[in-house]
Length: 320
Ligand code: ZN
Image 1 (tube, rainbow, N blue to C red):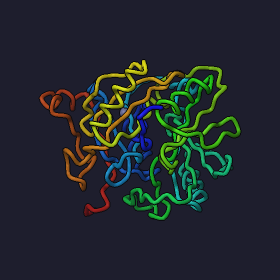
Image 2: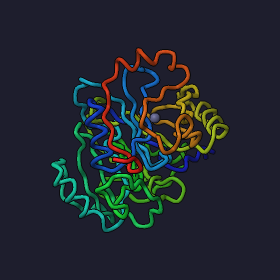
Image 3: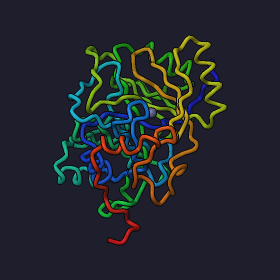
Image 4: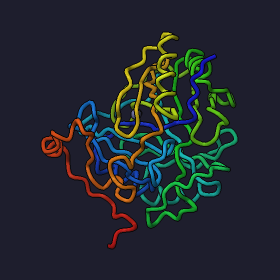
């Protein structure tokens, strides 16, 4: 057995073409908070936008690289193909009506195993599920005027991976990442971290033949939580010992990260809970201004000139 034990999902990172449409959708429609406006540290001429709850708590986060002009990707094997968020039980009908009224590409609510699920697609065709889940004690964000806090999205619920074969991926999730199989029905095997609370679930749909193509509307990678840098450093050593090709520890400003691929091809990241998003701007101001890490700050003028201006929704605390 491995000592690696992520406690849950940290964030999901996906690809969009239009940063403004992305902000409008994830804040205005879905009611998440834009908690950081920064750039892709590996290619700083593109936005990296982070959305989550009030503080951008790990396991509430979805983030996007904005690549204008990127062609539509294709969902398929070797890819994370849907991102599920948790909503309160009883809120599914409310969300269905809200999204339908707004012209969002949304399906009828459906039962999936023991769960009620609402599936829709964002402007780039990215698949999002809202899962009505009991016992999610997270509060989400109540900063959008027309989303009552009782219906607010609580945070991530589960990540769904599509794979050609189950066994190689399952072996990594269980033997290396310490997950347990919770359910196996309807072609979907559910893996749980720790007690399997909302935000700590991975579903694998196996038997998907065609491989996906990563581009706009698809997920770039999924990240799991490490409590701190010491723990992550130990996990990195263990991954190396087990023959996994894992990256150096990278400074992502709001967390430290390592990356590796699972056997089916999905890019995994492990990210620390600290220091979080209030490390370079006050909690009340999160997401209002373009933030750059110290090593990119000297190039701010050039970077800013390469990015389209964003129009942000008003903060609830701000005078109109
Ligand atoms: Zn990431």
